[in-house]
Length: 113
Length: 111
Image 1 (cartoon, rainbow over the protein chains, first blue to last red):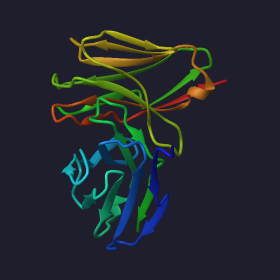
Image 2: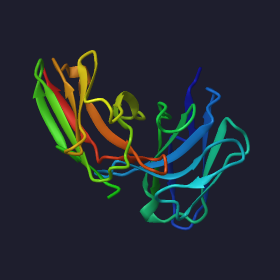
Image 3: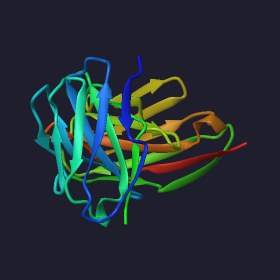
Image 4: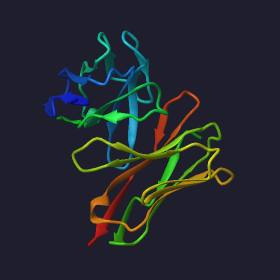
């Protein structure tokens, strides 16, 4: 079992460029999440999904879009990157809701210049 | 009201000592309180969790103490070891069934 994997691990973008972060889980979990982690701010939920074909906004969704076409994959898109989106992005999954253990991927470090 | 305030921001403890990290909240609708541990370069991992109908939960050297009336909960690490050096996050589940995270505490255990 690979658990939760994220690609890429690192990325540098110029302002205005777009990119997609891929998250994959092999635990057959229903719920998947995208967080961003910034120094001194803990984790903030960007978007989440409660099942294949569903997505919902979290605390900080602006500037991001997501899709969950397959149960095992959750994609995070940045359409026009801004320096404020420089962060470490974590994907997580859980069997059901957040009162079940969330399993996190290793993170993607994104720098927008 | 949606905040979880975590303290201290950083903590240095001697090997064998007790590490204590505190969290406070205002929203009485919060109903599940997990602690996650994060090592450098890794994602967070669940350490221990508690629900508000329980005042204390212990798993090995890790204990959560929960004070519902004070709206506070804390993590105690007994006999702290260098391998416990990590960043610890408290969190709380809100009425939208999402986790609200504390800012994190960087714990260093000195040998």
